[in-house]
Length: 526
Image (tube, rainbow, N blue to C red; front, side):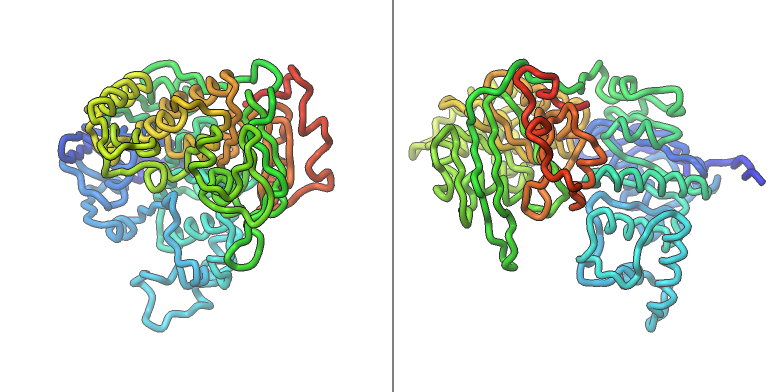
């Protein structure tokens, strides 16, 4: 028989307010999460999503307002209190111990279990949850041996095992293959069908509209839109998030590529464990095109970027930038040849968080003993204006900027060099960025392509690769296993190749890999 409509929300925030020094993170937020429904929580970086999620799970305590669980006022002093009230969160960065089994990870920190807990009973619970919600997980599997998608399933099972009836999923599809995304959506729908309240926090509007029943949009800590998903669409949600129209449609290359600007020939890199981190990589990037490298994390993407940028010396093979061999000669040789490098870890290896914007822009320059501080400040001010960096000024520390604004500073330093740039290696350029910053970064890369630069885009996000690239290659276990024109690439085929399941067609025919000059296959896929 059909389930009766609930009389009250499973979890409700009423007038929630949270203030940090100089920032109102949440300003009177109202949110109702109903059993049996998937609720999307959207907003730009800094809009207050993470703060609100932290309050809902007990990590932060509100400065005003209240939380209600099944209509009853609750006070959460810690995430443990949240779990006790049936509220759990699956974090984007998994909180698992690699050398423990799945069962051991579930038991870790669970105070409900006796000192001598039974692995068999935990395993039985895991199997029951896996069968019920379509989460194939083996209790005795070692977490370190699992794929990213399998680890995420363990996190969901762990949250359910601890009794969560309200689940918050933070950027759950960030590093999944298309097939894993589809499987996750089936699990989310099964959870909702079983009466769970699910919160889906994501920047990917297409996914949000596909899986959610309701949506709340935050901007500057306030609710600016709240409605049933059937009454909205991706364009309206983007406008609500940013406050203006946003264009994320892929741009097509205007004409055929020019001469090669980046050539990789037989590139190999030995890994510490004796296996090849990179093996026999052959790839050419021409001026005026973007070649996207797709793959699941840990399959050689970071190694490829660092070898091309000169940070690692290859075991064998060649790297040529604008015809000059730079393999193993260090990053300065690559830069001198006209290579720009934008690493995926923008704050860890691309920028110095404790230094100012002006100082960060000078880091890769050939400096004299005394820094021309006046000139550096003037240059920084010009970058702030030209790149629309939201900051208090050139003297602001990088650590005080949002992810999108920090990425703008990094791109400005690498791409706006007086000596010119022929080839660009950029890794995960829009990871963690909101819709507005993503639009800016995509537009910048499109302009550099139109001006004749060749771009090697390396990303674990297939949507990002499809939205920017003219050609797509898939890197799996350190090898290029598939190559397709982006406009005709099949998402299912790409996803299978990313998962290591390459069809008998292999890398495809020359027509698939190299579209005729001027053909429609030279542009990025939607």
